[in-house]
Length: 369
Image (tube, rainbow, N blue to C red):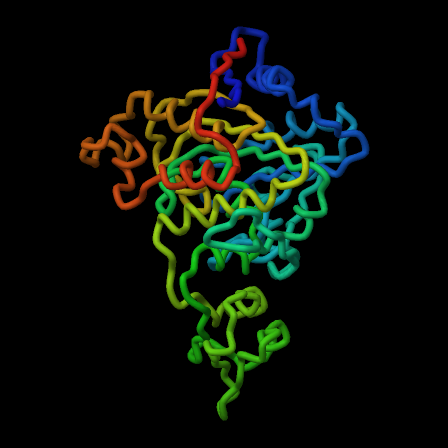
């Protein structure tokens, strides 16, 4: 069985905007088949790390939000806090970053909600049917409270997963800080006594009494008691607690796909990916390298796996830009993503997503003029 993926290119005749083409694409792809009436609709987006200029312009989000409102829904833009230290690791700075990058209600027509709360600790444990690496997922509460999930992704390369599309936007992006640790980490957190100020906030979030304090008042974590939930990471205001080890790329891709399935299970969902400014690295970076291929277009589908595979194929079929990082790589893989990040295998993400029933990599491409 194949899934339909709808596509429109970036060409615009005089008097026709790319945003009007996006709205036409949404309707042709069948977004109006979803009953949005009086439903809360989470539009999962990446607001972009300040300093990065490859993230999606808020105009795309407004077009999507306007269409959802026209269909009777109540949309909001959402993302979860990051695990690493940056400009989006708690709700206050995360909202500041969103505003700085142009995402505020006057520009998008809807509110921003940071799904896992102030410190990234407001999450829901969700079962993963058929999960191999994870039996449950820790997902931001606001995402799980929504009736419908719509993803709006900037398709790009990624140093840890090969590429970042719908699966990553949903799976990694909807995980709380503890959920992100679960996807990234093969170990448990540890406390840096040189940074710890002895405030004991972390202990209040530990349900297993794994955190103790020495004579100097600094924290230490008993890994025999610790279950690796990562809540202490979000609770620490001074970033004294961090992961002790990281998973490999294959594990990360598989865990991310399983988290994506947890988010989407049991409710309507729809997915849009914009393939422009295809940067080699994640939009979580505070900078963006030159695009690796020319701008391609916008894709939409009910199947996030088919959508990602269509975007991958389109990028790999495009000529590489000689002024990009591709000019510095050996072209021995017949694959732009593997040329850029030879240590990752993006195919694992697609194959595991198919294995657990998230979707299919087989697709029929329907072009919308």
